[in-house]
Image (cartoon, rainbow, N blue to C red; front, side):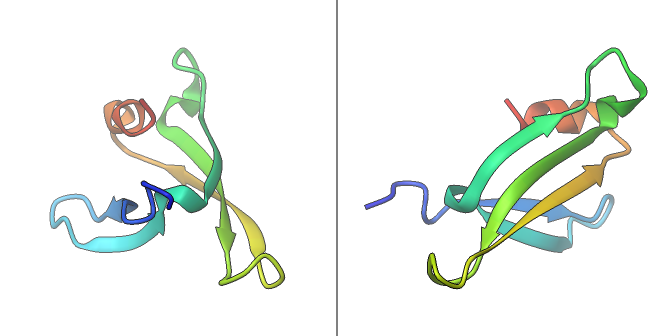
Length: 77
């Protein structure tokens, strides 16, 4: 049994903490953030497997920019 199957990465609306979207951790295949010393330090991305089976899976890359670069650092450590 996958021990991460019940955990989610949640995107929240700043100020209200309303959930924008959520992704099951065990379906995230790869994640990365922009270099700390660049304009991309507020950006992060991950690839995610959508679908109920290997046959129906669709792989998508989700790319985000956060107004708080510190939040990006915390989420990816």
